[in-house]
Length: 295
Ligand SMILES: N[C@@H](CCC[C@H](N)C(=O)O)C(=O)O
Image 1 (cartoon, rainbow, N blue to C red):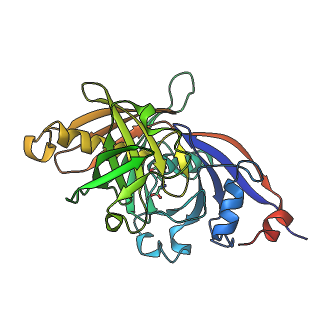
Image 2 (tube, rainbow, N blue to C red):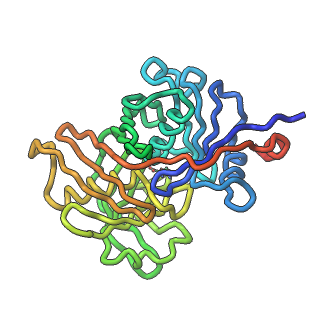
Image 3 (cartoon, rainbow, N blue to C red):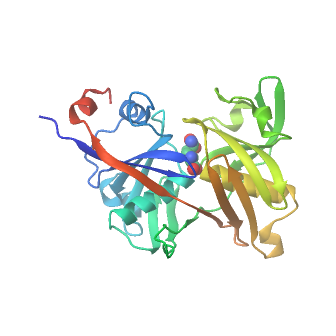
């Protein structure tokens, strides 16, 4: 008889995830099973999946185990693997807190993009959970012209690497990106051999941006944490702001369709992302259904 598998559902600024706690890394969670779990009609539904594993139990994280007890084994909704997920790290930390595995304050989370330092702020007096800040690492800004296109339109874009790849295009109107039911074109193909997350950005005011995003492996989503970091850095350089030169942190507010993220780039290059994270449900995956899926 097959046994059921525990899951939770959570989101960060409406970038939503199926959370599968599996401390000992015993589940066979191949791309087919991940895609089935993330399916919004035939599965639980999510932009991605957070497989919660002890670092010591995962071959890709064991080297980080001394620094970070838990590994965020992140997968995109189509089952593909990505290096990092900014909203995912906050939701992952919220899960650990809810499960009593960590408390408020600081923790380290192992990811394929390295160990990320996370701070869980105290809950408010009314009991609502505090926001979560993640040190996301530095942005790399490879040179070279990149363009992205949707339908008849084409824009120059900035290549920003946040551990995962981004193309940031400043547009006149977010509606110009159209329905985003398929991935935007990009060129040259060699700029992004593994595919790319594309952000369309407008200014809302001084140091205040709004974006839409088409994510590699998930389609258009309501938010992207690494994407918000990428657009903040691209906007700062466009605005002639470089904290490494001025010695002063630069903060941008980034509105996403599902909420708001605040991004600060420090003089040492470290980028901090602050935003909410919520767990909204928990339940059990039918064991027989899971086993019958193509891994
Ligand atoms: N939604 C995420 C990014 C997830 C990974 C991305 N789709 C990729 O393939 O690189 C975020 O919040 O950063």
